[in-house]
Length: 206
Image (cartoon, rainbow, N blue to C red; front, top):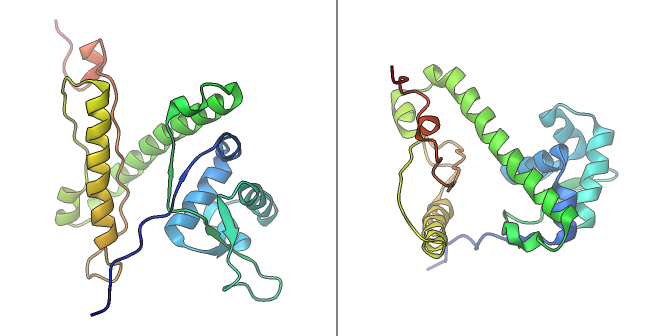
């Protein structure tokens, strides 16, 4: 019997040079596009991202120099060059860069960019949610939970949740009827000291 199990995701733990290169809006979007859409030319990526081919080519080369993207020789023909993401998953710990002010500033920019992306993504979904079926409107959405937990146990919790997400991703079949690409955000933040800010929809006390 053949083994249909998908290979484990190719992960990269960002080093100081990689994080400094990745801290750029177009480079971040290019890497994300290659991971979501698969290998593509600079021209195709420019069309997807609403930029020009020259800028796209330049920033792809910057990403390639630090090993985050690579050319795909199996797809290129003549002067046409296809690029692919070198990894499926990027990870880091913020404290990895505490000894390098430039790298620390870069990773803080990336984390802030992720928050802005989440907000923009949620706003776009809210604007078109009425166009989706009731099943998808029930499946999508956000929720939160409050708990008191030490940092070590929170790290364990995040690792277990990530393993669950990874298992579902490895079992995913893009040809399954009704399947859609979805993006799942995993976030853990300290509870705001001012609880009124934690629930902005609540009415002000009179």
